[in-house]
Image (cartoon, rainbow, N blue to C red; front, top):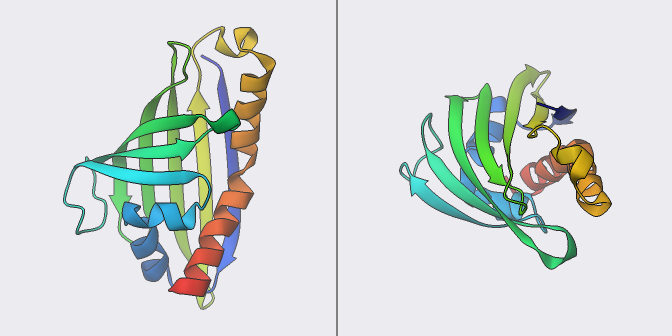
Length: 161
């Protein structure tokens, strides 16, 4: 099974507790990921509290050429103020699914937080070779956006919280 991954780290002028609290509230994601996350639909878990292990929700995200992707996420790990890991079996629009894992890490650094965002995507055998070039390019672009996504979170957190 082919795998692609990407990682980015940024320093945020907020405590790990503050950073985790904002990101572990999935209702904040449309504001954090402006232009990417369109909306969040809670499925299980209590939306009035931070995400916890086993919670599920659906992220509706903007795709290329005015398409919309839906990512059904399950919280695999939620260690307060330290790590949040979510996993999705995403439909690729071709009858195939990929497994995405995103891990967010929050490490104390000086008076703030070293925030690290890592994504790993496992694709079905043969999919990348047979996908239209625009779709394969879209996958690579998505994985390459980890620094941009981390900076969007930093900006949101430092300006609004």
